[in-house]
Length: 414
Image 1 (spheres, rainbow, N blue to C red):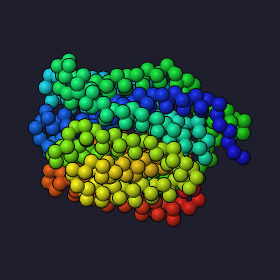
Image 2: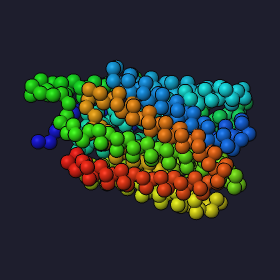
Image 3: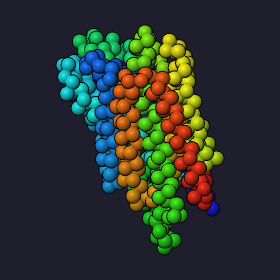
Image 4: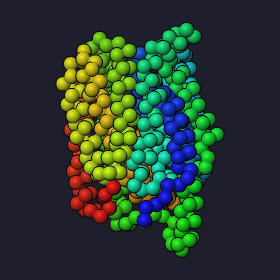
């Protein structure tokens, strides 16, 4: 018998979509100019990947706090608080740039990572009340909403730079002004409008069904498949995040060193971020129709294609680099949507938010490692070596998927 869609699901998705549109602009600021701002303040390319590492480590810390807060107090409290903290971090970056304080810059980037963690944790809220065969589409609906702000953000780099100049702040700090406002607005929207709380409602609904059936409140999941699937879902998201952050972080630096301006880098990053989120409805449909594992394997192949194209593209070719970064975003999207569906299928409601937060810690730490190491790799071996290494690493997803399909054949369908 097909499970009925909860009557609150449509409203919850609408509120999450609104918040994600706002938060996407905040998310894009650090991606686009974080490395450039650090290079300008530090005077070193080798450390240009450090901002990405810092706000990704901050994202890791925030992910576990948001997960535990959501577990006890609900998604509304956890997500709203996460965005407000991210807004404080964005404001701190602006002050650091204005005062020339490298210490405050690093501290603020760490705090700013809370916004990134919250943006990703929101996808789990979209799936809390979704029936199993619609979870991929529910996750993708929340993710695709990020596209509007995330694509607009990089293209507002020049505009926000002019705003910053007008008030006597370094132009590269301009996008962080937008980020602070965007994250704060997203937090307010969720705090006021995310009612009923999706996770608390899902628990209540499951408990009522359990009492009526005199059984377990959790969904029926084969316990022998849980650990293997949990490991696979985590591994897929960890690898795709590491590769995506490493290549994405150094692309603006690569372009700038070959004569491209901030506007061109912003365009390429806008295409990349659009490809990270815009294909989400398609990815969700594929996950629900063809299964989680097929889409996870597709992510590895897409990342390989991206790495090869990025390595071979002439540095002056904005459109080839944009295509390579679009494939990078698509590969990440395939991995995130399929991995999220696997995790949500596998983890019981009683520990869902806490476990999801822990998984996102691993994802964020992988991104931190990729972002921090990317500058060192490019300084030592060049951008092409970094891109090729990322593509080859993406192939590691395929044997992991094949092993899981062979060992857990009864638990790896859609």
